[in-house]
Length: 383
Image 1 (tube, helix red, strand yellow):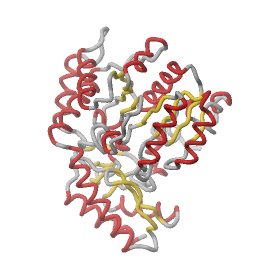
Image 2: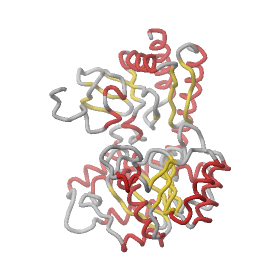
Image 3: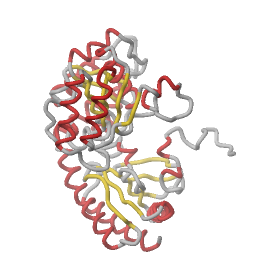
Image 4: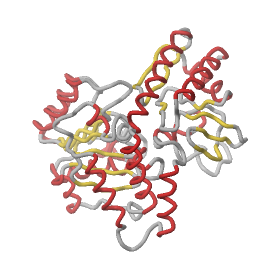
């Protein structure tokens, strides 16, 4: 038992002390790619709000837009002009989005995509691949989810063409949607992506790409753009870096599917809150103007190559490097070693997530990456 007023220490499970470094436990502020903890110590950060911040904390263009939106009124009785303007800008940059709806969290947006797929197909079952949030529809074994709901969902294996084809065909008459994270630790194969498109079309099911992590990192248009996925998925979900840390997510895609929203109920009081909409528009402008994705790839490649050097130098502790340039991490020989390395790194002023993605941002440069790699070498020698 403990006396925390917030059960589990924090409302964001992936920020629990046991999920990260143990120490520091809480922060007071962040700027660029640096975070200051409750004791005033400065840290280089590669967690970047679990990937929600791609421009760096407190980017001036985004802050100016958000401040102006606050002055104009955060919410009101009518839809804001900014909502349609942002939708138009996203559709211009991501052509396979014909229509867009906004929500506050990625979990809501993926759930909305699944709801639209069920409306469009008249079917109930869903196959998922990756992490799609905490809501009931995608929880296979979590307590508190009714068995009939759990039974409508099954996990599709990543990059396994034969198994994926078999699962889709076996469920075809009942299958509403296949929802996939297009990158899970490694890149997708061309064959797997093609299988998903061919088999969902054959089954009459909706193909949904959960691009919450990958959009605005691999490319503005995410994995669909990076890997030239054609035809594009029917629906795409955006989130995290969409508004550089301000709470906003979106579901978009084919107009006929998106218009199915009129046949169901997908709504939230704060979905049209103006500050996040303004922040997202400013974020998109910076991405286009400054070739942010090009920067993320260059700096991320330097980090990824450096992690391979770390593995070679500390082969007894580090057993592998996983991920891609824009989101990567180290595998350690044991859980205890993994935790020890993270704690040692944090003690030296480096927040580097263990066994899950680390992210670069526009605020990270080559010298910051080199300094972080030196800290990792020191942390491993001390572990």
